[in-house]
Image 1: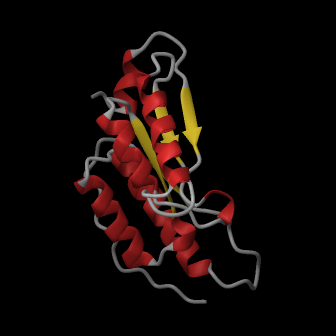
Image 2 (image 1 turned 90 degrees about the vertical axis):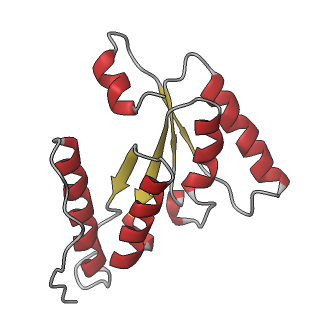
Image 3 (image 1 turned 45 degrees about the vertical axis):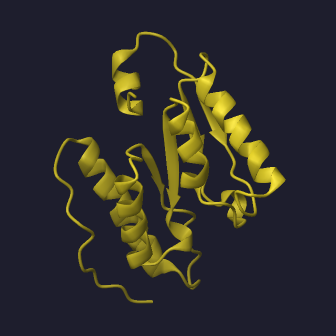
Length: 155
C-alpha cells in the first residue's frame, strides 16, 4: 500500500484526507466497534486518499490512534497516525515512535502540542517535542534521523 508521501508525489489530482477522532473505551465496546466499522468504510471509499487518526483530540483521553489505524491499514487504506507530545515524557515518545514504526505505521504526524505559558510547567517536554518534530523533518529530507539524544532541560 502506498505511503502518504507516495500519494502526494505521484498524483496530479487533488487528494482528499479525512480526520478521524478516536473514541473512548476499549475496542470491545459498541462505540469502538462503530468507529472501527466507520474507519474501514473510509479506507474502502475511493474518494478518500488517506485517513488521519487523532491522538487525544481536545486534550481528552481516547483510544490510541494505532488501535483505529490497524483496521484502516488492514482494509487497504493509507493511515496517518498522530503523535502528540503533550502526554508523554522523552522515554514515552521514543518508545511510542519505535512501536509505531515496528507496527508498520510510517506516516506519522508529530505534533508538539500547545506551548506552555510563561511560568507554566511543561516547558521541558515542549522542547523535547520540538526535537521530535525536527527529527521528523530530518527523515522527510531523506537523511538518517538520530535517536532522540540527551538534552539539557531545566524548568
